[in-house]
Image (tube, rainbow, N blue to C red; front, top):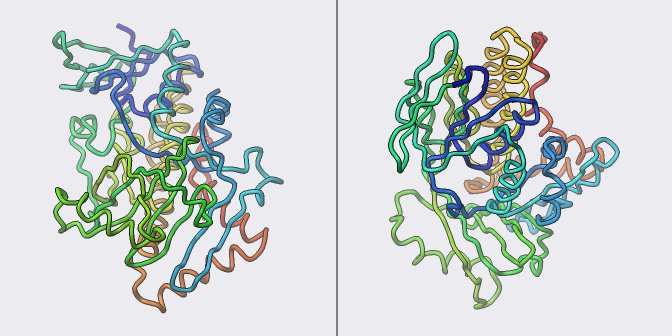
Length: 400
């Protein structure tokens, strides 16, 4: 068994991108996914413009553009003031190659990634493989996974845990997941009401203490996602009973919203104390989770993958010093704690907890100023670039 390859735990969108990145870098990769092949994973993905060049480098962007919804603007709708503040992504056209966001169904994303990986002989994906133990020594890692045929043992030079907020890798490392849980749950409703009839251009953020929401068109068949928050103390079992009233407060008249499916989940702000233990690193929700209100959780997780690809390729292929793993752990945690988490928290409070008119005016004034000019819009949108780490193969310059 090789000790100069990489084993990825988690075969969701992030794990598949991690495998693709490492394969492009010339590494042999094994992916262990506890779920069955073809398992349905309904959900919307809103892929920020800052991710486009990375997706292009991985060779998947063109296929995603063929099925996804290109979003050319983001808007902030404030019912209490009657304002719709629009941020045109074309303001980025003179500084980036791909000045747009891409919305798509998660299953479309996974299908494209799997299709590319199927043409990559250096990648093996094992379904129904649940990690039951993880050990490591100075030369590599030993992982035992259980499946329908019993237990199998795998040996690899390094392990990447991208197995979500309930990460088994994180638990096997003995890492806590400190942070907090918000007093609301999110309800993501997939429905077939055309929000463009209400002036929504592919996506919008609705700021209101009673009817705050994130709205996005997620495919070309007319499927949209409407994500709202409700008190966590309300019974989860009766969400579908309350849902018609929630939607009726937003949609015109007595129109049928055409609900397709819905999911509910708690909102957390959590991050591990370290993204690295020996030869094992964590990425994405295995290491950090945040309310999805800014979209930066997805962007930050994607840049985790790119940074992990760089350092693991340098270790396995070029014999780099393991200090690059320390740089990965330190900088990716810095990005979350200093940028992703505070901005996501502030945005969550504005969208769903804006009952104080003075505070709301203060928050909206910042967006109003940013939307007032092309330069202001560009500067506002460019904040997403700060979620990407510089090259970790050299020491990161001190901020001082």
